[in-house]
Length: 189
Image (cartoon, rainbow, N blue to C red; front, side, top):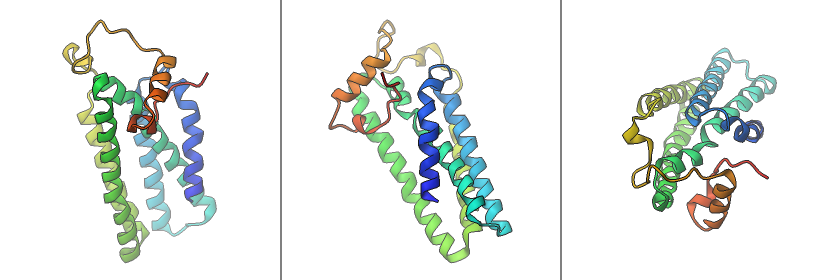
């Protein structure tokens, strides 16, 4: 099932750079949260009804992987648009730390609750966390920023927009930093 999730992730991630050229990161990421939540709720239903065959489970995991890709892939763009250039390593380090903190919480929940009380309860707890995360993201990430919030702190308003190629070259030049380890969502040439 990890292969199914891993298959859904690149299928979606391959198309996202072109989608992100036309649709804002927030919309893509919030849609990804809904897709991921749909997959998790399908897993709850699957385990509750005990129809856990590979033909049912695999598509659910593909959906989960696709939702995760929609959430994670634009992250590099969001960080780059939210922090000043000199703060990029700190921004990427914070994202890396927070994502791994979430795994530190959810992996034991899945394992311990799944082992002790069954997969239906484990998936239900994970679904509750996914719902809470989606609601928090919606509330904490405003749809529109005020003019004073539009540019990252320390970035001049007249700073030119960086092209995809420039972002890719800058990312490649940052090898050895966490910025090089994160997806910057630039289209390949």
